[in-house]
Image (cartoon, rainbow, N blue to C red; front, side, top):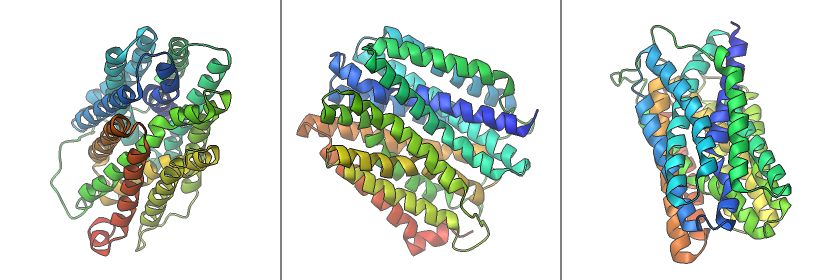
Length: 388
């Protein structure tokens, strides 16, 4: 089967697992809050459970050594995203939503790590690395889709339960389409922990930057719909912010994939682009502090556009540092990312509990992104992290 068809299946897999399985909570939060199922503090804890599951799934994915283990996690993750989203139709309170979001966190991490490990070498072997990069636009279009579905549901006056059902139906349709054409793990897949060599020394430091990125972007990514709903008092205009965030994220991946890529030059262009994405997102987080319509719109542009591009650049840099440990490093970096994400909603819950809002959490999130960018510019770190 053509590698291009399998890359398209990878794109759709991330679109479903991340856009629906992972991020469907964001456009649902205004519903769950208005229906009295949870409060803002509980919403932060539910989001944290999702990211705890994401961390556990990423760590587990690192140790999938045999092809059947890789395939089992990929298919299991895809089916769980659909089934747990369907089960959310019957969820009615804090604990049920928390457990279901934990499960979708595990499932979406499995899919992300396995699709990354399978699609990127496939794209390189086919001589189409740009198409491999575009796979990471899948979550952005998934977010765009869930946002449009939420907008339509709200205009029709539907409840959160109905929207969960719609998400599950769309996810099932996407899964049935891609099942026969998903990329297959090679017979020689091995993800046993490798000995640290000079080519691997940058991975832990890259993980620190990725964790700071996870902490920085996750609060606006989780609570953007709720912030917009509070600003526009639940009017339909509030529902435009989340699909615009997803569309901006997909466009950002396309823009970064079109750049001139020169992996053997020093300093490497990946480093500059990575730092730029971190600092742009920091500006977007601080713009959300304004709380106004223009401030949130600026937050959508500055946070959304670099969102998935940053993920793409981190994964690309990990392949440059250790090209033979793709799956292991994807799992390790995703786990670091999940630690940062887990910290974000917990911080949001504390911020909401003690201050009644998200402003302190947004300040910390933006500062984390600035710190991550500064860490990448430090010359001592550069010598160990970015120069092979």
